[in-house]
Amino acid sequence: MDDPNMEVDDELFGDIPIPTTSVKGLSQRVDDLLRSGCQQKIAWSKSGVIAYVSDEGMKLNLKHLVCLSSDRKWTVSKDYPVEHPAFEIRSPITHLEWSQNTTDLAVVDTAGRICIVTVPWMAINTSNIVRPFATDEGDDLADVVGLAWVTVDRNAASKNSPPIPHISFAAKEMNSWKWVMTKRKQLYHPRALLCVTKSSLLRLLYHRIDRWGTAVIELRPVPSSNFIVTHAAIASTADNRVLVALQTADRKLYVFRVQIEGLPLRPDTQGDHAAQPTLSVELIDGGVPSGPSSEVGENANHLLPLGLSHLEIIATPDTEDTPKSTPMILAAYTPSIDLAPISGQLNGPQTVIVRWAIQEADRTPHHSFNDIGAKSKPKALSPHTVLSCLGSTALHHAVSSINQISDAETNLAIAFGDGSIHFYSPQTMVELGTERDLNRVSSLPQAGFAYPVSSS
Image (cartoon, rainbow, N blue to C red):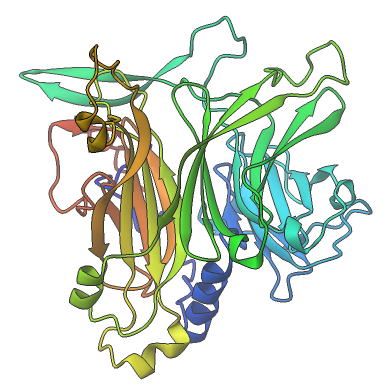
């Protein structure tokens, strides 16, 4: 389980060298993040497989965690390049994303083509291509700016079955411990992903029997280059729908709610192969100016223009006995590292985090209607959903990655350009782990378990 307070054994992986981030590497990383929302060129699956893209972007290599029989120490294997006749790379690879089943890897190139590579469990130097690049035609406007696999997290395999619960953590009450149960109610499919393109198209890729199907819908028109999408985020919600947030080139934020009907819950479902899932889109709010407030920018001594580097959706928690909160949009804004010396900042460029809450607001008629005499009391208007800014937070350094850690509550693991990793609560942006919580247990060491000391 992921927990910021969990103790980590520094000797677990022996003397594996940890590469440090150079200024040149950090500069390139930030520039890539400012350019597009899909720029993850190294990805680590939960099964211990590390996939990364070569410097020129035309090769995909795999590494594996292995335990040496000679000294029983953990290390990483040599490179195993993915080489298949179906793995034909026409354009540089820009993004890698592992599925929650830990075996499927989505590989995206600059033309928006998506290849699915499967790495079997406990197998070294073995990979299969289940969806080749050639399946998509690809073009410049098909470039992917946001991608997410549909959840497979211990959910029900049947639409009529209840979600499968699992233990999240234990909280101490008086002299006893109470286990907190989690039940996932999100959109479910064992092998499907969603992505957003520069041309504002939402694509659903799903596996069914012996083929991959595709369903596409336009989120909003793109009449000019100002409306091209640069970053997007996708997240399932507790009502089996999908939230999509995107930013356009003119620095405007849009949020959509997508309903997916007819998605087969099992990839081996028999029936009409021609039937496709249907997608319907509802605009929640749009045209919202993005970026940090001027007050936070001045406090952070920002002398450089800030650009969007990360866009995340913090979905509503679906855990029993957890206080319900509204979904949030979280955006990170960072200046280009190349211009940092010009700014005169002593500690280098800083990242500013901005959060918006997706919440309902009452509709009120215009005050001019009060001047019109009405014979009867007007009917109450139904509430509508809007984005409400929760404020901005300046961090101490440039952010290189943001990952969500889902437990009973969602926390953020933020990696900075100086190599440090800090944990934050997205609700308050307060750093976690500064104090050890003795009334919460989410790992065996916290519960007092320890391996016996070896006599040898």
